[in-house]
Length: 254
Ligand code: NAD
Image (cartoon, rainbow, N blue to C red; front, side, top):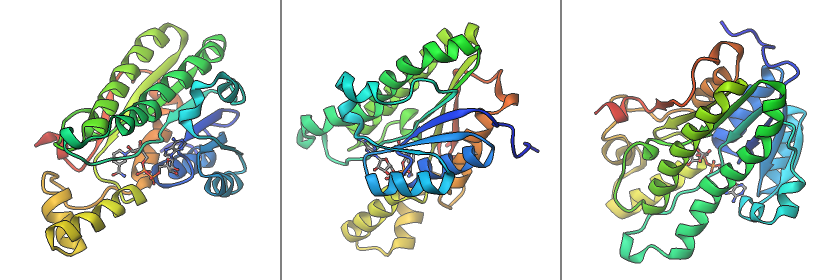
C-alpha cells in the first residue's frame, strides 16, 4: 500500500484542476502530502479546489501562456507537474474551424511544452521530478470527427517521451496516463448530445456508442485516474518513464 504521506514536502501544479480529473488529481496529491497549485481558467472552481486542498489558485487561461508575463507569474519551483487541462470538439474535417484546431493545440500541446520547459531546470537542480501528462485513448488511437483532439493528444504523447529521455539522467520521469471515457462534465455533455443525435437514452448511449469498444461497460471514475497519477508521482515509480498507461476498461486492447 502507498503510505498516505509519501509526497510530503513535494510541490505540485495541476492544470485544469478546477473540475473532473484535474480536481481529483489535486485532491489525491494533497492527500499524499503535496502542496498543490491549482490552475484553471475558471476562477471560481480554481479557488474552490485550492481551498479544499489547502493550496494556491491560479485563474489562468493556458492559451495566454504564450505571453511571457503570464507564464512568468506561475511557479517554476515544482517537483510535480500534471498537464491535465483539455477539451473536446467534434466536427468533420471539412467543417473543423482552423481557429478551434489551433486553440486545441495551444491548450493541450503548447501549454504543456511551456510548463515542462519552465519547471525542468528546478527539477534538474533537485535531481528529482515527476511530469504526468493526461492524454487519452485518443493519444494512442484515432476516431473520426476528432481531428483537433487526436492530433493534440498524439503530440502530447510525443512530447512526454522526449521529456522522459532528456529527464532520465536528472531523476525526472515523464509519463502519460491515457484514459478512456471518464465520468466528468467533458463526457456527460457528450452523452447528452449523442442521446439527442441518435434518439437514445443516456444508458443506451453509454453502452452502444461511447463504451461500444471498451471491454468493461462502465465509465472510468476521475479517482481511478488520480490514483494512478498519484502513484506515478510517488517514490516507487522512478523506473517507469516514457510510458503511456491506458485506464480505459480495455478500449485499446480491442
Ligand atoms: P473537465 O471539462 O471536467 O475539466 C477540464 C478542466 O480544464 C476545466 O476545469 C476547464 O476549465 C479547464 N480548462 C480547459 N481549457 C483550459 C484552458 N485553456 N486554460 C485553463 N484551464 C482550462 O474535463 P476532464 O474530463 O476532467 O478532462 C481532463 C483531461 O482529461 C483533459 O485533457 C481531457 O482531454 C482528458 N481526458 C478526459 C477523458 C474523459 O472521458 N473525461 C478521457 C480521456 C482524456
